[in-house]
Image (tube, rainbow, N blue to C red):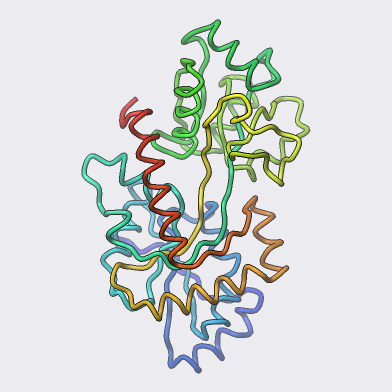
Length: 319
């Protein structure tokens, strides 16, 4: 298996602190595995704070991309890594969804990992082509119901967060829409902008640039309440009660990693989430910071797993 791109900490504080930290830590290196290809949201977030985290831990930190099988390849590699705190997974809510959707899961999202540190929460946005005669979630639901099977929605692939979020919305709203999977979020968005697809759900950072674009309409956010990043956009739950779909971002370690090691990393990350510079970087990615203790983060993951299991049961593992 080819190892993905590795990148030693060389940005911001990391450029100054990494050499000194490497010497002080006796040459220790911590890998943060991103189980997707370079350039995705998770990699961007991992690189958002790696320099400062390296300085706080007095270690060299490498961000390593290990894509494949919807994130399962890189995730499973961390599950098999030595439980010494020097291999971490940069995970999100799809950590549970990927395992739940797989006929034969490559890892157990709960038993194979230790929660280390939550970083934040990101919501999504329901967008529709301006060619549709709708301006609200209620109008979309009504229009789709009056045209059953005639409308479609785009996503970056079967089993993706965009697919699950939209399929879950359709189920709770009681509407039928045809799923059209694309190779990427950008491809899906482009076809909605062109009017070839009718709707999609994307991360808020992907929707914000289109807040004033005449080709598209932002109908609702997937968080239980309105998002601070798009306060003018209602929550879908205001029209479809009970609907919520968000993604957490955080660090996990292999099961049986010593708790003192985890506590040290958790404290370092929690400290960084008070840094105005780090907070601004997270805000630019549409992420609300949410530092949690390892116990609270573990509960978040377990609760999210149960919620995602319900979504998968409702949506189904196949088309």
